[in-house]
Length: 218
Image (cartoon, rainbow, N blue to C red; front, side, top):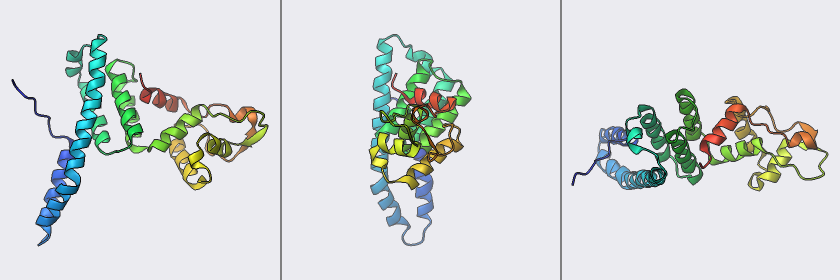
């Protein structure tokens, strides 16, 4: 029985480069490399194995539903997307981001994703953003204002929708700005006072909505 050996990932190359750099440090080079390997290499291997298992299981489920995996193997666009997503997956411990990356790959596999350039852009957003960015983007798409509220600001509604952000206006204003600068939300700030009906309107841009659909479970 033959065994397929996984090709080295970008993470492997980064590890090798870091190891090579540490090796040239006088005196402490050897012990530094050993410490690096001890602390970093095992968790990276676990992350890669867990990621491959999660994606693999989902693809097997889709195969049972009729997906032809042999065609995916020949699809360079899909393989490129998997490589990009896998590199991002190894760099995070947040399960929400791992789920987003997995769901994105599945959407590409079943042909329910935007065109290739758009895919690359959206995958880069998933890699760059934190879990809280996505929670705020989801809020922007469907804010829930308290019943009977006549006036208020999006900041107050955000704190009501995501209680863990209550009182952290410096943080969530920066996260909102990140989304706005990248064209994912249509309102520049959160502090403008508006009517209750206005507070319940979506503030996600078309690109923001596409990203949310891209990372949603299929």
